Amino acid sequence: MSDSEDDSQDKQLKIVVVGDGACGKTSLATRFAQEAFGKQYKQTIGLDFFLKRISLPGNLNVTLQVWDIGGQTLGGKMLDKYVYGAHGVLLVYDITNYQSFENLEDWFSMVKKANEESDIQPVVFLVGNKIDLEHMRTIKADKHQRLCQENGLISQFVSAKTGDSVYLCFQRVAAEILGIKLNKAEIEQSQRIVKAELVDYPHDEGPIREDNAQQSKICLLQ
Ligand SMILES: Nc1nc2c(ncn2[C@@H]2O[C@H](COP(=O)(O)OP(=O)(O)OP(=O)(O)O)[C@@H](O)[C@H]2O)c(=O)[nH]1
Image (tube, rainbow, N blue to C red; front, side):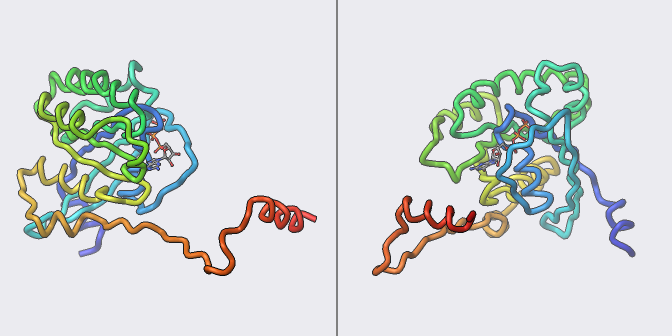
């Protein structure tokens, strides 16, 4: 059987990714679906769409349709339609941006309202992104946990930049929707270990001084 025939038999799950502009939704989806990351910010107009097939315990394959919703759509006419019928929702914020956390209330209200008349109620994850910038964190982890407890949300921290826990996040959403329990070994396997890059200057040279670096750039231009 070819891959595409195989795909067509997979269960498809609709996962909607919402949150403020620039909190990293596209980066998260791109990291998951294409294993790539771009530093340049390019605003999503409307929505983007990604498909990725994953495996769950018990040799179960599922295809995730990831709906990456532009942050500027909040309050717009189309948003309800994008979110309607989602099996899973990722409420994403940037841990270094307080406003993106505050605005989750509006995003969550919209998610609940959009699905009021749907037969399926989505599993909702609270996703704190950019944990590679831990030193710039403005929302304490206990505030994040409190929001989860008060609203029945499932907690996840990720970094779209390093890839830390991104695959795990989507795998947990799918498992939760399908009522599958991931064991510790499966969770650990999906968690990418982040290694810091160490710059090792030769001891006798020391770091390059800014004025020297400037000169060498000028030389190159001439
Ligand atoms: N350091 C760091 N930067 C990130 C991370 N995720 C995203 N970024 C950066 O944050 C900026 C915004 O990322 P996007 O993924 O475009 O944000 P978005 O939420 O899709 O934005 P909208 O399209 O406006 O809704 C980009 O410059 C990304 O490179 C992360 O985990 N760590």
